Image (cartoon, rainbow over all chains, first blue to last red; front, top):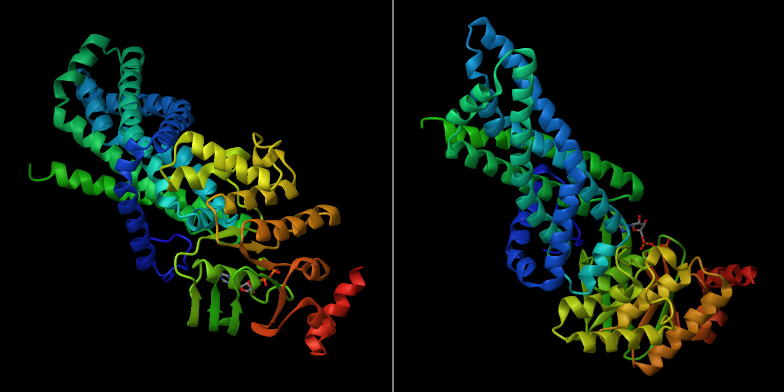
Length: 259
Length: 230
Ligand SMILES: Nc1ncnc2c1ncn2[C@@H]1O[C@H](COP(=O)(O)OP(=O)(O)OP(=O)(O)O)[C@@H](O)[C@H]1O
Ligand SMILES: [Mg+2]
């Protein structure tokens, strides 16, 4: 696919089609990213910067998500004298839904936005066209390493967010609701199944790919200079948010209904 | 080498090229001049396939390698000048590191940038960015190089250096060059032929002498306006 060739239509469906092709092509270049030394180095750098950019935010977000969950659920459980189940409730909510969800939100805000701005600036500065003219596919050189990095990093960060969230919930349980930590952890570990962990991590991986696709696509479709770059950044975050919600629902529906 | 036949191009209903026909002969330097917004950059983009005509045909000699010097240089900001220049070799050939280094140095030498090779694009001047872009365009032994306003925004002395460079590379490396420029005096000094575009049409293609003497009103107006600058 030639990125810089005139776009074949502005309507929603042709945009979705182009974004979809961008995603498929970037996965077709996955072997190149793994085998080529330069491409591998780019991917490692992207992995590193994805992790570093997101880590501080996700630490705070993960911890507080767990604390809020712990407090709200704990207060509800206390009404029925069931505080011993606090760990289970926090754990299940976090690994199935909230962990991947907050990771997606943080990644989109911290990494996706920057990707859209970076590729958007490159597009309006003709750098993407220059790659194309030099027969270097921009999808291979720019998108594939970023996509791989998001695909790998997103589940890792989601796992990290879950751990911190569970800790946060336990902290609130112990300090505010008099739930012993050992009891909290026992309850948490008793409910967690491997399936929950896998669907949670799968969700995070899907969110990573969604963010990569949307951000790179918006970057490449940037027009009209600096204004366009701003708009591409904004659009990438909004569209990622919406898709994260929708895909989150769909994956939950797929794995937890009728089972 | 390059052949345009009745090329038309519209953007959102606005006609930018209205039947453009011309040839670029092997080995020549063709300068394209004309007022802003008449589709000079659009014409260049058709040659490399970044744009496709609505009607008419653009043909380029089979297998010709085309280098493109963008108006802003279009260097990648996170690579040094040397890495930028070696990028096409690294990404599209299987040459050894030594060979890549040798050919990169050769291209850097051709544009006189050996000294600043390890700086980043943000650390060098506008003229050097253009020369780096040029080195990158020729590093894979291009057959033709397209220059989009290689001297805009440069002082007259640097501009003259670039003009001489275009001339020299064309001779040394047997290139074919198409140069979009606003500098008519400069174009007369280095070009074999000058093409004037106006309102999406070719007004005149002629040698510099004929161009300056032409009595086509649009050309006369352009020539007189350019002289006023001197
Ligand atoms: N991708 C595009 N989409 C829409 N319109 C475009 C596009 N590219 C160029 N145009 C329009 O085509 C016209 C010609 O543009 P072009 O860049 O070729 O002008 P130019 O002759 O190079 O001018 P300048 O000397 O200022 O660089 C302009 O009006 C521009 O707005
Ligand atoms: Mg132009």
